[in-house]
Amino acid sequence: MMMTEFMQRAIETLAVEGVAFRPFRGERDYAAMAEIVTESYAANGIEEVKSAEEIAVEYGNLANCDPFADIICADDASGQLIAFNRVSWRINEAGERVYWQFGHVLPEWRRRGIGRAMLRFTENRARAHAAAHPFGGPSFLHGVGEDTAPGKIALFENAGYKPARYFFIMQRKELGDLSQAPLPAGIELRPALPEHMRAVWNAREEAFRDHWGYATKTESDYRQWADDPKNNLGLWLIAWDADSNQIAGVCLNMIPEADNQRYNLLRGWVDVLGVRRPWRGRGLARSLLINSMCLLRERGMTEAVLGVDAENLSGALRLYESVGFRMLNRDALYRKPLE
Image (cartoon, rainbow, N blue to C red; front, side, top):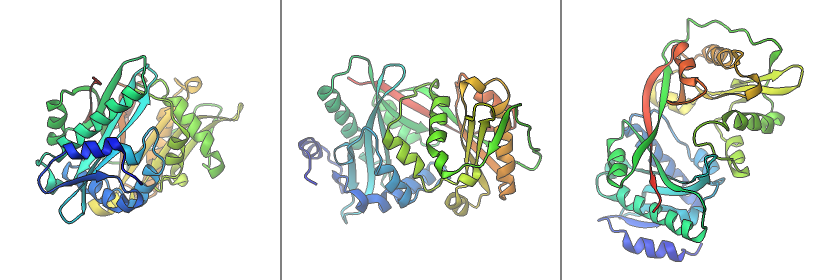
């Protein structure tokens, strides 16, 4: 694909010794990108493995992002990909246009100015998009920095970003003491079937619509979620209202086999837990959470982890703490106005 004029000009301004910047090359980059993410996470103390298959699904279904214009890649002198950064945009329920930046640098290439150069690219790309597509509300640049990644935090802070929100990864170290929890009256669990995927997605999105920063999802988002190779419907708990035949809540669990193998873990994820508003306040979330941990235990797991907005207004943090979860890691969402 022909390089865009913006990309050509941008590359001419990026200079790091021993590094060549270039556009994204599609599927030819997937394996290297997966390795970069995995090794970057490892250096930051994040026990997660990314596969080329996952990258293919994610980057084949990007929303509000042209990968050949909105991703900057960096190669070493041999032509090996060593870093990348992308930018995409959303308009959230608060009426803000947000430009999300996501990137990684191989650990051995850090502290050389690559991250700073790529951040400059994505910021300027966001400005170019904003100029071409005027928006009446406020616009912000966003990025995530883990407490375990001081270099990334310094990168954002030196560029004028400030923490706007904190998110916890929480862990329950033991699952052996749990017993099955009863469901609220009129609620029943049914097997998750492929033909229910759209209904599960819609229920999940409705449950999270009133959360901070929520932005309406696209069909690309749905495809990225539905085609995720880590999906295991046998680990999902779908709660149905027996009278209305509607989904009341979902708890979408997974066992990341590659993570567990690399880090010698027996860990399951409570990846998504959501209850639709008409069924809240009846203990359904608690029942789904406890029963999910029991299910993970039945599959041989000894611990469970999940993520939560530290300021979640639905009381999720209190719920998780009440059943034994404790903070494992903390991430900060950094942002600054787009100027």
